[in-house]
Structure formats: structure tokens, C-alpha cells
Amino acid sequence: MNLIQGSITAVRGITAFGKNIGIKPAKPDFAVIFSEKKASAAAVYTKQRLKLEKI
Image (cartoon, rainbow, N blue to C red):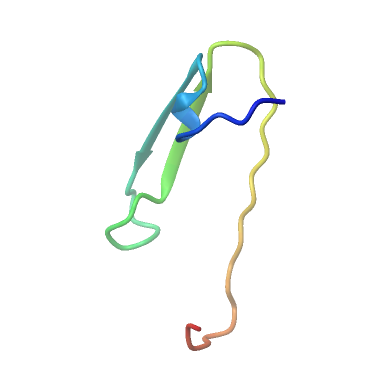
């Protein structure tokens, strides 16, 4: 396995797009990642239920 420096788009054949659609204020909160070749993907969704102070 080779470590590629940079973002996801540093990988040949990968295109990505991020945009704020209103889930989080003023930050990109939605992304589309496109692969020119067949690829597998996974996602993690979280919801913080407790209101705690930041560390």
C-alpha cells in the first residue's frame, strides 16, 4: 500500500465536491465523491445527544 499525500482528490480517477446545504452553519456539510473505476465506500453518521463543553 502506498500513502498518497493530499486530499481524496490526490488519487488519480477520484473527483470530489463539497458544499454547505444547511446541516451545519457556514461549513461544508455535504460531499459527493466520484470514482472513475468501480470502488467500495463507507460512511459514518453521528449525532451528539448530550450538550457538553468542548475540551
